[in-house]
View 1 (cartoon, rainbow, N blue to C red):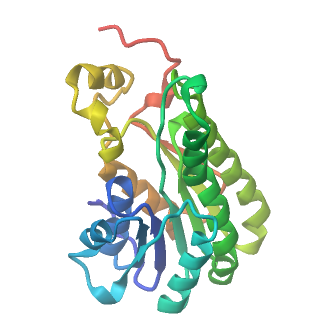
View 2 (cartoon, one colour):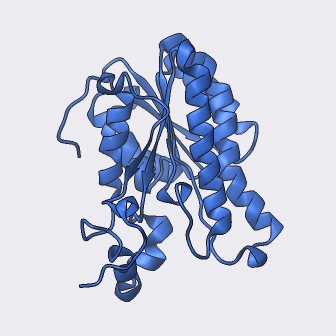
Length: 258
């Protein structure tokens, strides 16, 4: 999955949303690099599929709904009880609901907010004492939608802008305690969440039109960037929101006219 090999032999990694898509790719990339990994998600069967090819001694599956306020503290407690420490937290879980803001009902807004930003807040709150003890790092999966605006997804973008600001401020507050805090910002990436677009060639082509590298992202494009940000090679990098977007964010937004 990755070209470079990182030494994660003694590291304990927690990945939320680890049952599919980017979360699965990130968890497996850490496992491929010899980390011990706890994967979190709502569907135990999917989590078990993520770690099926790896040693049971190096993996832990935790079925929890990350949107429940008490869940992150319970998850961190379970990881510490099982592995004894925590070195890397990857906050990946996220959901999307688009459309005009007037069409999004309160339950829909609360559902998206609770997964995309509230869960990150509670996860950081629960994990930072353990990360301070290990000199660890937290990496969030944000989005290019957290850097600029998009049509028909104001509410989603609001949650991702919140992630961006939260990550940068956490980096300021916790750097002196030895914790690095960063994020990756993918553009359109083919996952279960985007299948409704990826399966329609004409619609997908409108997204690809804005991507200089000429193709949508894959989960395996995102995982190596997370590995790097968690590694000693990134020891002097904190407070960064790194676009992993095929060049999408380099554009002014004008169409690619061939």
